[in-house]
Length: 82
Image (cartoon, rainbow, N blue to C red; front, side, top):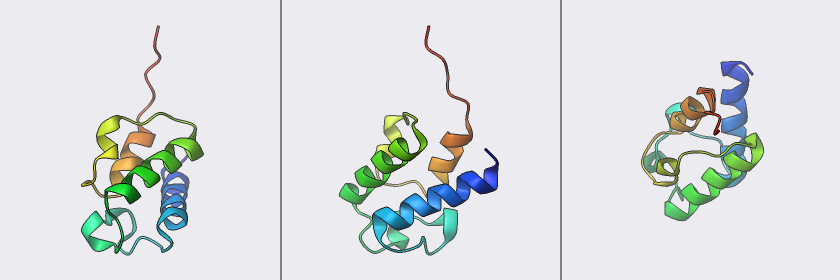
């Protein structure tokens, strides 16, 4: 999937979870969005995992990084486990 398509999907999931579009696109930080607290972070994390059928690293469950951190991880090929 292309970068633009992934970005649109990540922002779409964010909009669904948060109830509003990300104010700064992928550069949106938790402090930019009303209601982006630790519970919202967990909801966003699990929604992205579910929508992309991909397990994300647990550090993304912690509040702090911008929305682009999810995109960066999704663009990284998954490692296959033996």
